[in-house]
Image (cartoon, rainbow, N blue to C red; front, side, top):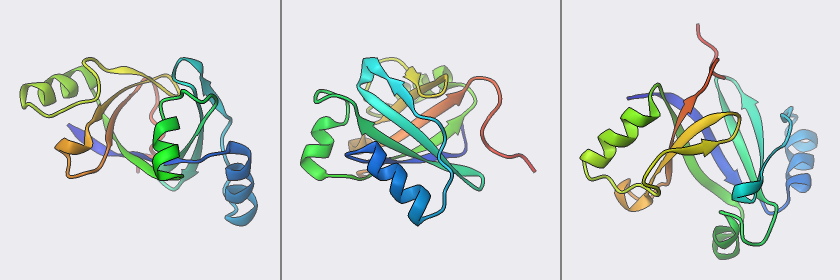
Length: 141
């Protein structure tokens, strides 16, 4: 089911401040911003070798991460794993009575489909399963 790490997500309170830090202080080249209006998020991916960081910032006070940000501040939010079939992976977890955050896979950033495993089922870590549509970001050797 799991093919590899897709990304590690970091919640940031302000995308411009984060962009400045990651580019000028760490020397990373950040991708273009993607706005997920229905979820209230701005997403920027940072390629690092065979994986990526995903920076996530709220674009409104009622975004999916606003409560998280108010309670915990910025920091690591979740780890995401590549799967080749999100529907099959999601259903397999449902059948195994793994707690998920939604009844069905959802649309994700960069034309992906995603499903989240609730931290109560995974030892306290929010996990995302990601099905890429088209070419994967991962470099194949």
